Length: 179
Image 1 (cartoon, helix red, strand yellow):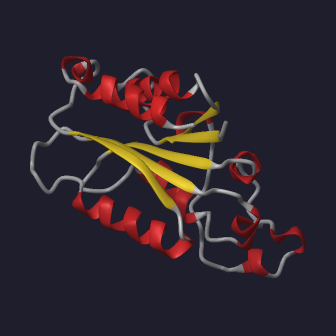
Image 2 (image 1 turned 180 degrees about the vertical axis):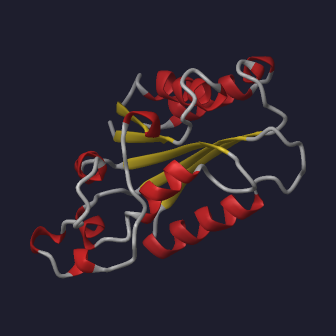
């Protein structure tokens, strides 16, 4: 049994990214402890690159926002799942702020062993996810993490469009495969 944190990067509640993440959670919850962290529920400022977290007591960021709550959740996670809509070939700005704030020595306390990726994009271009997949692979390599899998969905724009695809089943199956 693993502890899984799903970082949902959509501000749109009950949208396609939320539906995809929930389908993953339904599958993963059968054999794991799963917690969803939605950017819509937290206020996280971007990293300012000051590096004061490397010298401050407790390695804490000087910013007083909700990132401290997210650090606590990630500290106990075995697996992190990134779920995001794709905007201009990248993850959402709100999710990117969380990822950037992981530039902290506190990440050395994390026990994360695997990452998974759930992406939803309106475009149908074959290269739609390439930039994100490259960053994802670089993170896997740098931190020596295992890829737990991906569900990449193209051509999904309006709320509920994802229900017309096989993606929800794929996400459920991915979640179920994690033990």
